[in-house]
Each structure stands twice: as structure tokens, then as C-alpha cells.
Amino acid sequence: MLRGGPSGQLTDMATLLWIIAVVLVISGIYVILARRDILWGIVLIVLGFLIGPGGVSIFNP
Image 1 (cartoon, rainbow, N blue to C red):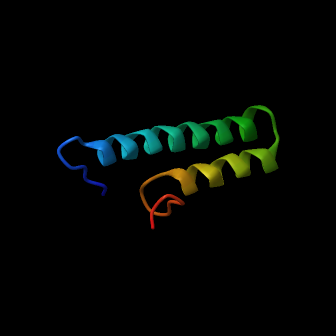
Image 2: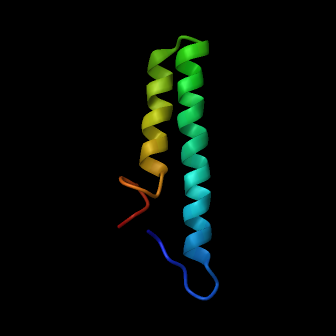
């Protein structure tokens, strides 16, 4: 878990990354179910997992 200093900047960034990741994953599920575009949906879901701060993240060193 990311912990911020006195200003809480890392915590704010982690929250922002979580929100972006959730939006991407939900968008991917919507694209798969409603628009029947499986490839684009999978791309959005994978991007959501890569951006999210938990587990695998492209922004963690």
C-alpha cells in the first residue's frame, strides 16, 4: 500500500490510479457484454489491471 508523507500525495495518487483502473475494467466489461467487441474489451481490462496500484502496476518501480 502506498503511504504519503505529510501532504498525502502518494495516497492521493493511489486513489486516482484506483479510480482510473476501476473505470477501465468496468468499461472493458461493458464493451464485451453490450457491444460484443471482445478484443477491445480485453485490452481495456488488461490496461485497468496494469494501471491499478494494487498487484501489478506499471507505475511501481
